[in-house]
Image 1: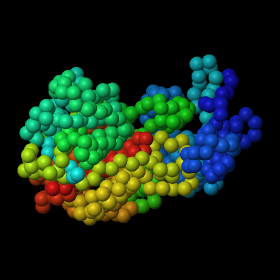
Image 2: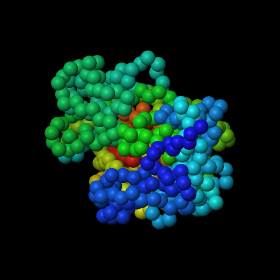
Image 3: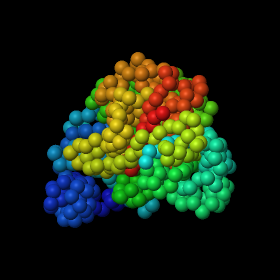
Image 4: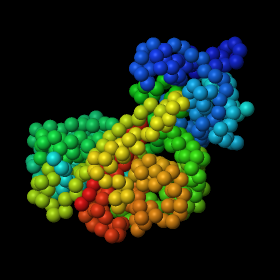
Length: 136
Length: 380
């Protein structure tokens, strides 16, 4: 079984510690995730790829306790497992919305670290992986 | 040019089987025309709001093909507020004297879903199950409760109040009160929000007839003046639905911006308002919006709710017709339902749910995806 990422251009994951791939405006320095081709603050089109810090703090969170409707492509029915969702503040750069590895024991302000987790099995039998944050 | 509302009409909110959205729109229009004592041929222009119906102006097939300028509007959860603002501005500009704002919708049950790419979001955001509004509302109120000391019991009390108010409203979708225990004990959907703390997309229609204020007495002896109708969208740094990321810099949301603009246009402040309709997509939204619209400081909601101040006979009556929690949300009609309720309250015609003390000033607020808000201020 091959492991494939949920999208090609959002994280480094095959070697070393995983990192999210964002972008940084060459004019005003705002950091976005995922990478954008134009800046949402100053409308510049000069955006450079920027790897995001792997660690941060939980800024806001909830739980997803029912299977979302399509276009959600993960497990449904009995195979659905509730998951946490939150914004993690990565240094002083950006807050990224991400799946959290647990639904219990989450606290605003707790330290979090990025990891790669299984998401679903696709039609070709590949394991699709995605990014998530785990409390440290 | 000042604007007056001289007629309101509503098709009840709920689920109506084979009845189409257009049919419901025609019912609301007929009731508004009857309320104003005029005929469809008197209407000089129209704006119509809907999400599900591509061309709500097709209602002319049921009302009469009179050739008027008739513009269809979709603007997220602020669709009906946008329809109202556009109709009012048409009169303020002096282009026409008498027109109608109508909204209609017919949604399937369950949370709205869409293709994230249509919202400038990546497709993986939807594939992962994050392109979902209830999750955002859970995160926003969870953070708000952490930051400002609001409890889950307060959320349950807000739902119980709105369902009690809905029980007094013959046009409401949900008319059965629930205990706070049942609300807190229902299935957890997005912590801290349980199933009964969310409104449902449903069906319904509402219509409002507007005219030049100096002509209002031709149609009614109880004109209600539209003092402000403002729509705003999110600025960078607002904590908004459908955001795969947020910048570190923080900014107030579009509700705050629309509210401030509306109070400035009306020349009054929150302390002058006697009856309030807020977007209660979920119980947390009502709590947050009370502060975002300037009616209290962050955290004061805990005591205001416990003391019954948001009840029909309280100091700040909120969602006197049951709000979205009791009426559901047909997006195109929801904001005009709020205006319908405020007009009845200011005329003293709200029956069992009439706010005592002859309220003079009313307020409505809409908020939702993709980060858009609409506020109106009305007075006798």
